[in-house]
Amino acid sequence: MIAYTATTHGVTVHVWPVYLDAPSSFMEMEFAFSYAVHLHNRGTDDLELIRKRRTIQEANGRLQDVDGDDLGERPIIPAGEKHVLDERCTVHSFDAVVEGNYLAQLPNGERVRIALPSFPLHAAAN
Image (cartoon, rainbow, N blue to C red; front, side):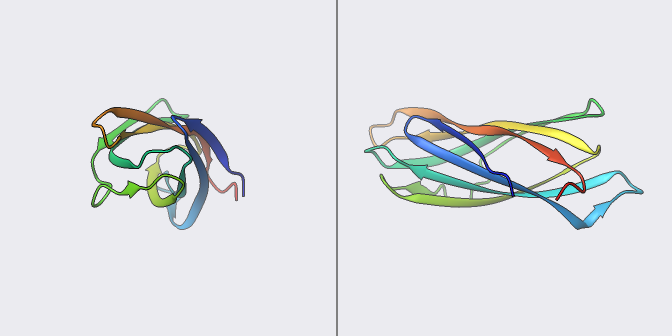
């Protein structure tokens, strides 16, 4: 399985996308994916995740824009620690590209954007 990686503001983010055959439907052109997001806070300050933003550009031209605070209880990632998020999406073409970021807050109130590495989705490519 291929991992995609980006580091911003001292946080390294690894993403592992996986095609989900069972809930996907070729006949309905709905392709489901799961992706594990590992955030490693290599900085000296704790981070509180506030929001996430995703754009999913599908090969058929459709653009999904996901912006929300559905991170649960706004996880805090202590300095030097890791946090794992499991996310899912459904696309309507065989290929797509996901890009995005997390909005995080430092203890002093400063807010920073943590990049999610850009990664491809390929139906039935596992």
